[in-house]
Every structure is written in structure tokens, then in C-alpha cells.
Picture 1: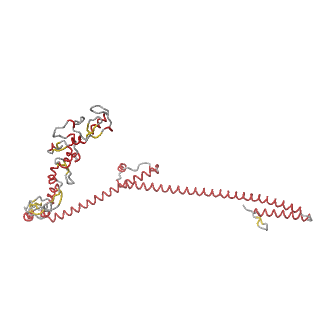
Picture 2: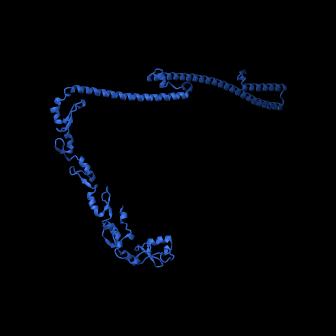
Picture 3: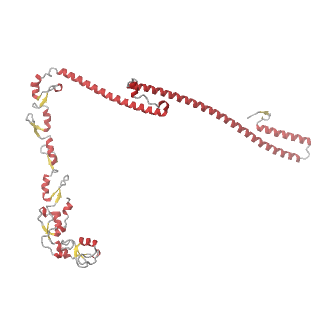
Amino acid sequence: MSDNNETNVDLRSLNFIETINSNLICCICQSPFVDPVVLPCGHTFCTICIHQACEASPVCPIDRSTISITDIRPAVKIVCNMVNELIVQCPRSEEGCEHEGQRQYIENHVKNDCLYTFASCQLEECKALVLKKDLSSHVSTCKHRPAECKMCKKKMRALELEDHHRLCPAEIIQCPHCDTSRSRSEHTSHLLTCPKHPIPCKHSDFGCRWSGEREKLESEHLKSCSYEGIKDYLLLQQQKEQSLRDEVQSVRKENEILKRQQSNLSQQFQTLSDQLALLLPSQFGADLTCPEEAAAMGLGPAESILTETQRLKNDLETVSSNLASLELKQNVALMTETFRLQEELQSLRAICHGMRMQMHYIIMERRGASAAAAAASMNAAETGASSSSTDGNVATAGSVASLNRLRWLGLIDGPSGRQDTKL
């Protein structure tokens, strides 16, 4: 139950001490008015009661006249004072509170003065709800209250004090063997030297079953112990046994390492076999020798692994030689195709060169014909020239034009007229 629920007071559930005037009672809740309001028809009700009634039916509950929420007005002050001054009992009267007072002050009483309401413990770690009248006694006995060990003066909570007493290093305890007293911190070291503390024989590891007080071990038991005379031999045997155990442990560790390595190699071998089977299904499609087949052939695990390894090496060499032969064939084919392409390219270059020469020849022939026509027209226009001179000049001009065409085409070289045949 929270503090808010304790301090909230329902005014309709209060017990009234005196007789209540019927004019101060709401006809809806049959309790004295709480925040009374009045309707235009003159009837008075509690605020909450009349609002709930209007939501169900907007009429006056007494004379059934039509009303509206806006028509509701607060009752006159004297009516409010009369209901607030009614004497009531404290709502915690069933728990033992005997307070009686006016209704208008009862909520303040419950919140601040009533000792029979619940309140939280003041300790942060507790927060338990107790009656206010018991709050002081609860704090003095709360298990979360601060406490201090009387022996070591260490501060802690009260609930930890009991456990601390069982382990407190400053607490004085009595040795159960020699009946001497000392602090708990010194008791452990005392047990190592306590003459009355029961201990086994020094040779209990070798089989002696004697157990008794520490002071009797040296004075009585060791003189008659059958293991005391051969203790050196027993110690030597114990050292050898320990050495053998260490060696066995080392061999076990080495064996575990070898097993893990063998498992890793087996996984790698299987992975490589699967990859080769995918690349070369004709050669590696069949499964390699399985453990059952190896056992049938009389091969041990190590011999089986070596056989498969040798077979794998041979297959890898075969694959390598095949790859080298294939690479050589590809290189020869590439060189042959390259030479063929070079010959075709040379032929195309020669054809292009011949076509270029023919084009130039045609162009120069046209230019020569134009120049000859122009020269003939100029010679015909000249007057007083002899016919023989004219014929010689024309022949000379024709021969010069022919030589120029041959020189341009490259059939003759230079002024000497040497012929030079070219592609």
C-alpha cells in the first residue's frame, strides 16, 4: 500500500459522530454533500453526483426538470460550511486511531498527524511500510540499520553482522584441541603447530593408517612405524613414479597434438581430392582407397596415407606434363596464325601502293594534256616563225612532257633518264 492511497480520504465513507440534518444529505449518494452545487430548480447535489446523472439523463433527479451542465452553479457558502463542520471519526479508527474532528480537517490529520497510517522506513535500502507509531521502533530494529562490529570496529549493515561474527578476524576463539584462546586471524597458524591437533602419519601416502595428536607423532609413533625404516627407498620410488607420470602426461599431450595434425591432414587431403575430382573427373572420379579397402589390402593407416600421397604426386606430374604440352601447341598455333596475318597485311600494303601510283599517273596525265593544249595555242598565235622551227619545238615539248610523266611515276631516275622498276 503506497503513501498516496493512505493519505487520500474518501469523504463519503467517513463515520459521522452527530446526527446529520436531512437537508445536508445528497439524494443521489445518500451522504453529506461533497462540493455541493445547486440547479436552477433549487435542488442541491454533490458535484460528482449531478455530473454523472446529467451524463445519463439531463434532467433533475428530483423534479425531472430539464437541466444543462452550464446551468449548474456552486451552492451558497453556508451550505458548504455546514457539511464541512460535521464531526467525523478518523478513517483509521479501525486500526486504533481515536481522533475525532471536523470533516474539513480530517484529510490534513490523516496526512500529517495520524499515527495509524503507513509510512516508509527512512533507511534507503529498506523502504518497508510500517505504522507511523511503530516507525521509531522499526528503525532501531531494522535489519538494514548501520551497525558496528564490537571486535574489529568495522561498519556494516545489521543483517551482515551475524555472518561477519563467524569470520571476524579479531574475534577471540578457543582452540578445540588444546583449550587455548587467541584471535581468529591467529587461529589458522596455531593449528599448524598445535600439539593436540590430530594429524596423520608422515608416511600416510605410502600406506600407514595411524592418526593422532601431533606431539605423539615424534615421541611415540615414528619409533614403531614400519615405514620409517624404509622412508628413503619409498621417497626414491615416489620420485621415480612422479617422473614417469610427468613423462606419460607429456606423451599424452604429444599424442593429442599428433592426432589433431593427422585430422587436419586428412581434411586437407579430402578437400584436395574433391577439387581434383571436379577438375579431372576421368582421372580422379573414382574414390581413393578407403580405410576398409586399405585394411583388406593389408595396409596400415600410415602405409595407406603414403600410398595415396604417392598416387596423388604421380597424378599431379601427369597433369603438369599435359598442361606443358597443351601450352606448347597453343604457342605454335599462335605463331603460325601470326605469320599468315603478316603475309596478308604485306599483300594489302602492295595493293594499296599500286592503286596510289595509278591515281597519281592519271592526275599527271590530265595535267600534261592541259599544258600541251595551252602551248599549242600559244605557238599558233605567234607570227613570223618558221614551220620547221615550229615542228621541232612541238616535238621537243612533247618529249619533255613524256619524260616528266615517267620521272614522276618513278620509271626513270633523275635527268639522266635511268629506268628503276619499283613495286
